[in-house]
Image (cartoon, rainbow, N blue to C red; front, side, top):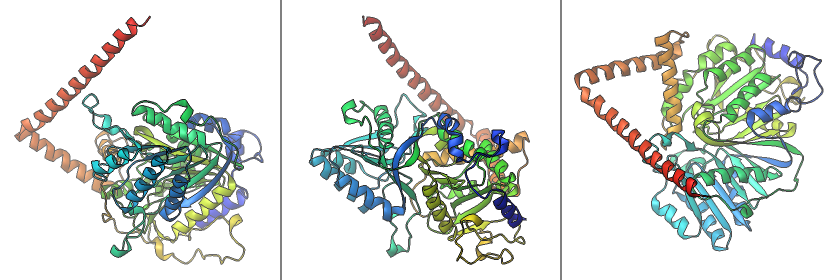
Length: 522
């Protein structure tokens, strides 16, 4: 059935990225999908299409880190670096040395890291050394008494921009996890980034400047680029989301809705919202080749169970789900219709879509999308497909027929793939600590399951048995604990109420002072 559906779909759509008659109300246009729907894409993402760029795909630390260090060492005027965390290990120290060396030459070096993301990753001594070396270092959203829940918002971006001429948007932080440790048998984390030259670079620097202004005094206008020369023919968008803006979620849902041929996704911490899951299900039911690649093992073990709890609705609709067999898949990428691609920091979960500062490069170019598709297929060679029915063989992952090389041997659909066996549910911890964003996404997944069971608003699948049992046991245990020891509940509630009240009083005092100053100003 799956092979027949794919064959039928390939024959019906010999070219990709074309507008469907059902969408446009007229015969399919001989233009790429992103060109037909340019204005809706711009409105959904809050980012215009920028022409005149050259974009290079960078895979893993072997291609990303050397390019970053080379750009830093060649800087002449300024370096803007934003990373969710930087580890105080041999990799982080190499970057610190490069930044300090540039600052010593008189280059303006500005660095933003996230407080929660970097918790336990680097010591105060590490940051003090950078500051003493001339690097302007700022921490995003450290705990404040006037903002008791401020820690829920994180700066999850990973970017580097140099001299307004070259920039990098990526999923990689800075640390040895991405390099690996052969002595301990740990392979490098799988991740993806892009190198950008051209007219999109100023938009990336201005996105950095907005977060910089959130943490203190803004960057002077003279230190920001006013424009940049064209460096190629690639069109792209720079989607810089901030808390509660959800620009990337709107764009992700729009792409899932408008895709005409295929949509291939890779995500490190998948926990899709009901609306996004429905968009993927609807696309798959409509014959779109929807695939989702997620980690098989993760640095946040709970996320594996939470992600797997969401497999069944996708699989039942025809979405193909794969688990990476390597150490950790940390990439956040998408490629649709062989013409549209996304690379950046946004995960497919509520924390990234609603709670964080995120940065993604959306590239609308068939040549780049072809490279993304090829990389995706190579990743699937090291992945295990999850299936609902072990008796039903699945076809080997491959390019659509119109893109297959003529000399490549065709895979037989009658031969079961050895990698299609469903893996055991257990995971192993690779290292590192989970972030607040991942914990929030996990809490939402548990909450959805518990809410569905109590309110009976949807059927729960067998894969949600573990979450339902865990949630039920947790609630019963808490009820017994609070019934026997009510003060255990009273003290935290009193503390939260006192902290919240104090925060409002402090915020109110600041607002009153600002009001009086404004009244005195003529």
